[in-house]
Image (cartoon, rainbow, N blue to C red; front, side, top):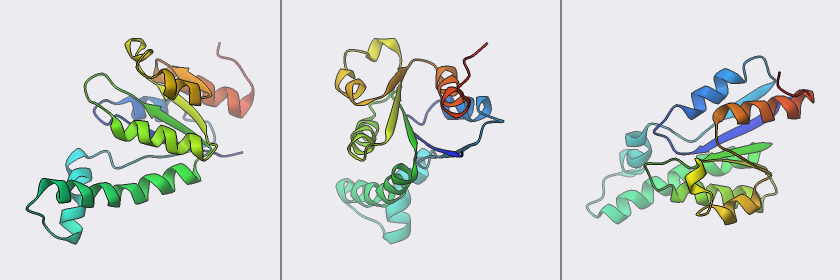
Length: 149
């Protein structure tokens, strides 16, 4: 059984790489949003034409990125959403809600100090992890039924 996993959320750390590396040997296919921040911000104006107003600049990019995000979440068996320390991730909160509304298996990954702020998001998740390695062990368990160690 191949497990399709969409890795969403914070793009400023290597958490995705840690999960992908840890899951080597498992039958998992990963997808994600564009993680090049500049490309993600500027895709709309680069493809569709410039905007003088920052609102419309961001609007074009958000709409174009939403096509990729929606497709990735819709095709996923499991959606992992990372909320990081440094940046506000409003898009991650949207992705969590969208995945939950579609009935996707949702794993939330965040540091312990975000527990209270994310309590509603956690309520929609099937699991909440603090470390990428925990996500890997969850995927291993789902695929093989084996526990770590």
